[in-house]
Length: 223
Ligand code: FES
Image (tube, rainbow, N blue to C red; front, top):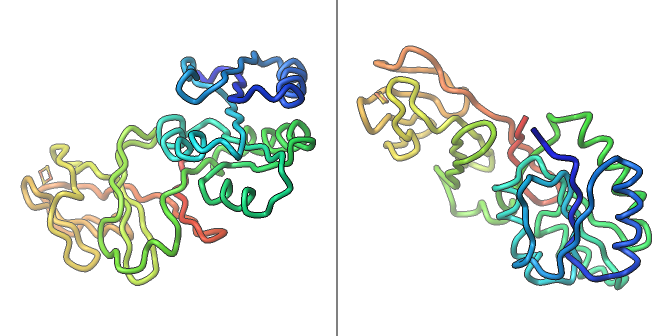
């Protein structure tokens, strides 16, 4: 079960004080760490807050989103620089807010986040990165929705279950012909855009998942 836990990776006194108050208002626990390396993510936090100017945090966001897909990951900006703000958004933070507005914005975002699990998603890549990458562009394991393969065909991105329903082979390791994947183990075929089963021995379709393209980025829906 998701723990009501907020963690911050910063020693900014104002941010720590505000987050402490926010946690108390939400009935959550609050813990702070001085660096990404020192942070402890067990039990899974509801929120991680980091400084948008911390290069370690910028680098870690992608990994956090894979390992902690239900966690809201926020960054605060102390310096009113557009570049810092944009860099944090591009890194994949779910929320970027100025230092002074962080607590308010966080509570607002958290309300939406908790009431709309369908909006939970993880960033796959920048839309600009799709150019020249056709077919399988990502294989994602350890997700709450199971292993997923992400495919790109002519500007459109699709995500499909990456486990063959016949005997569990990893489908994305099979041959891809257009939008049809052939299971590497016994040859079942599926359309990876619709999930439709085209040939057995598998006798059911594979699941597909919603992919959103927004703000120059590609996201996989996790709920
Ligand atoms: S495991 Fe895929 S067809 Fe058997």
